[in-house]
Image (tube, rainbow, N blue to C red; front, side, top):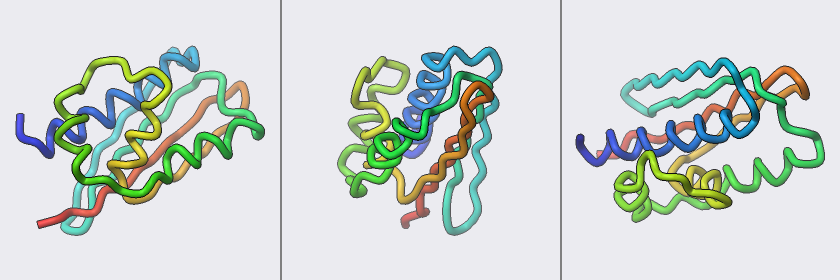
Length: 116
C-alpha cells in the first residue's frame, strides 16, 4: 500500500474506532477523491457527542496540518491511538465537519487537499 493509501487508512481506522467506542451498531464509511481533495466521511448510529464535548472534538480535528505525521501515522494504521487519535486525524487533514445528535449518532467528515 502506498503512503497516501496508508494515510487514508489510518484516518478511516481512527474514525471507525471512535464510532465503536460510541457504541455504534452501524457505521458507514465513504471515501471520495476529485482533482482537488479527498473527502473521508464516517457516519455512525452511536451515542452522539454532547454539546459540552463537541468543542473539544472540534479542537482536536482542527489541529495545524503536519505533513510529517502522514507517513508515521500511516504505518500505525489499525493500531489503537487512545487519547490522541482525533488530534492526529486533525494534524493530517485540512478541515473537518462534525454533525451529531445525542442518542442518534455522529457523522465526521474530513478533507485532505491533493498535493502534487
